[in-house]
Length: 338
Image 1 (cartoon, rainbow, N blue to C red):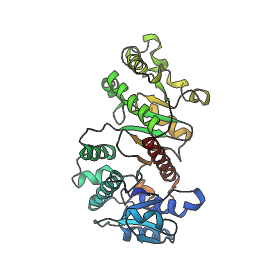
Image 2: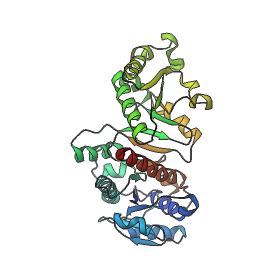
Image 3: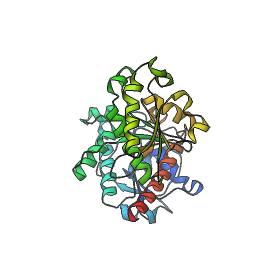
Image 4: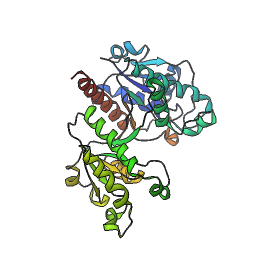
């Protein structure tokens, strides 16, 4: 079986230790095989700092699955890391980016089943000359460079009982009504429906479309965006054969009975999507990037510099990200073979 490629993220954050913790829990939680793209010396140093014993074997992507049963497979980077937990250093930027590059390259070459990424921090990357807004945009750039077609990544938060997709993401709330368009909602929904069908194995995905305003605008008395922007998007999607419905009042969209009626909820802004997702599955929600020519998942948390190196970071979300990546890869492979 082809292993998953796990990039180490910012080595000054909790990425190295949650990778170690996930590996040590592999039998107890039934973890699929993965290899870590990292500096082996840093991983050994971090394990020693944490007081845990972890066998490490430097290997290649193709041999990683065989190694995984008895040792943590590490595909070594050309770059070396400074081991400074809690103190991000621009000197580590080259290795952070190299790990992402090589994970994606391996996946596109068929040498890895999926890409799983530990968290990165933007500032040390920016300080070292990184010119992309964030992790997802860089992955889209790599995808575009590979196949010559511009990638349009879509962010999904996936937990055991809820999947949410924010249509607008990291922008100020005041900018949402200016940014939200019918075309953006339609494009986001198309990608979501395609990946739910092809990678999640849902034959006819049901998409609940949240309204922007309270009570979905209440007939226009609390804003016209739901009538003029959201509803036309729903009409277009339904005309295309996508099972979308809305706009729906967000305050009644996320209770258990409502969730039973859809496979994913498209939300109009960041917190509308992330608050319910994190409330229901704070420790095991997974960030999934849709719309890429490879599968990418990541833990739904940041670098947590404040607790790095202290041995208290929980690997739950990384474990969930690795398991979901394996499931999506297997489903995608079956769909491609059908």
